[in-house]
Image (cartoon, rainbow, N blue to C red):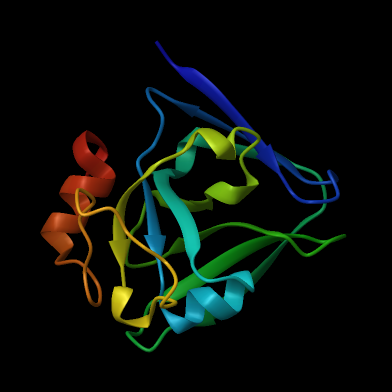
Length: 151
């Protein structure tokens, strides 16, 4: 049975809904890009099927080519500029939701940490949570983060 998760931007103008079978696994990225994008110590994200996401409100796109040659397209609230989700040509059919924008963000527990060599020294990661100095090997990342939703 599908569950409905809702989220949105800081000002409330842009809202989105995820229709998923279960709470999507959350991961944290501690790379410098994510730190600067979020204005915080790391970003907290979930990969969901793109078709599971619907949105309303003033949402704008910002696309750029990554160092790896992929195109990453980020969606923001046009009013308050909160970053809500992105898609990437390297992961077709999926969206990466910024889970801090979920209404129930306080119920989430990360299953994976990546780029921990860049993490802030005061952050302590539980030994039971897989952590990687840089990116996780793609097969491990898919197994942990996508599970049965893998392409």
